[in-house]
Length: 137
Image 1 (cartoon, rainbow, N blue to C red):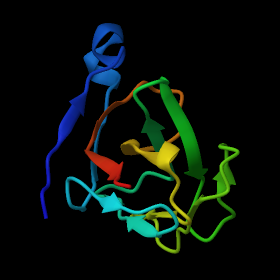
Image 2: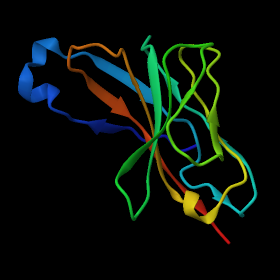
Image 3: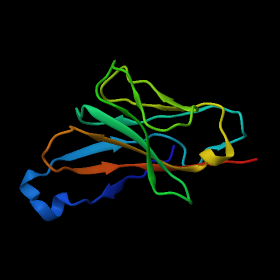
C-alpha cells in the first residue's frame, strides 16, 4: 500500500498559531484503483485522533472540491450530500470512516479526499491523505 501525507495549510496559520490543533487522517489504499463500470470498491480512511466529524470529498478534472458524505459521530446516520446514489459510508468506530462506491460509473473518476474535524469554532490545521482513483473502460 502506498501511503502519502499531504499537509493542508489553511487560514489557521494566518489567524493565530496558538489556537491551532493538529489532526492526522490516514488514508490506506493503493494509489490508483482501476475499475470497470458497474464494479464496487471501498476506500478506507482512519484518523489518529478523536475528531467527531469525518468527511469524504472528491475532485474531478471538471469541478472543484465536492463534499460527498459526512459523519457527525460513530453509529449515527451518515449525511449524504451528493446526489449520486453510488456513494455510501458506515462509521461504527470513531477513528474509521470507509467510503463505499457501488456500481462505478465513468464520471466517478476523481481524486478522493478524506478529512476529519472536531467541528469546533477554533480554527484547525489538518493533515490528510489523498489517493487518485480511476475508472478504466
